[in-house]
Length: 485
Image (cartoon, rainbow, N blue to C red; front, side, top):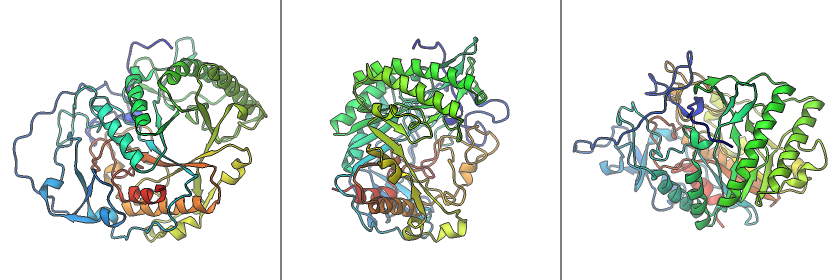
């Protein structure tokens, strides 16, 4: 695919200018120009002091025991990272209040059967010189962070090694792309190298090498979920109809054929043959004509790709892959998830136990196993108090006015008001893993969703404190117990 001569910055990677310190207006535009980051000035020497809030400290160098290693009080000011641009942290801290007074769950039932695969999904924040995603406007880094060209490679190397120490055998990552409408009405998918935020081809190649050195297989999923115009501004997704679907498949087919040679050359082990996290693909109900179009189009793409790409493939569970009998012959894995059958109140969530949550879980796992393919299954939840009572995705890389909002806001930032709950995240993941074990099947690879590439837990422009990431949180301790072999 010919590279575009422009760069695009869209909603899910940008941050709001006023309330959040950078980004775009939800009323006028979702886009800003790409920030030019300069090295942060050397801070004036000061005597470090702990915040008045009692803190727990967690080692980033050694695997701390669960649960006690995640509730170690600290009185050492050196444990508290005051420089948001510092990446090499021996310990991280978090306020004791982020456990909300709850006891952490025991990892009852751990570990998973050794025959079950283990994996971790990487969070998709990938700035080459600013892995922590601290942009201009931060109160403690007004110029943003600039750790130098290639800083991301070092963090990805460390992250691959950490994931391997969890006894994982797989790591999942996305390059993600934007899509645009051309003057003639056709669609084009924009190269990651011409966008702000996705991992570049060079860094992806380096990460695959790091993962392979760590003994990990690399799974790559496709994510093309937002439109933009040629001036670099957000554009609503066009109407769902057959004509637009056909234009989508033309663009996606070209993208997949171009990527096939590159992904094959760098050694991607398993690649997504569909595009579940993409425009038009989240349509909940399709007519027979629409199912036929999706089935036949994705079948052709898979056949074209497999003439070049020699790795394994997967598809996310959807309503069209079994429309005919041929498609699954092109696929090695099926991806699926699980859900709770219950509508939770905040009061119920506040007293949640692994047992009470596990009792409400359901999935399509048993039905999908009949196709004879191993399954990819994700576990995880955001570490926010209202994750069950107000379900959905709360943007982790910027300020928004609501859960499930893609448009960023310069006047509202519910992320700043959202209460952190590390214990809830640990409880839910414990319940999910116990549920998986109760299925009595080994034909699975279980992925933890997800894992930031940097250690710090405090929010600046990104919000690891309320995000899905388990890195350095008690949920990582739960995961380690279940992944242990």
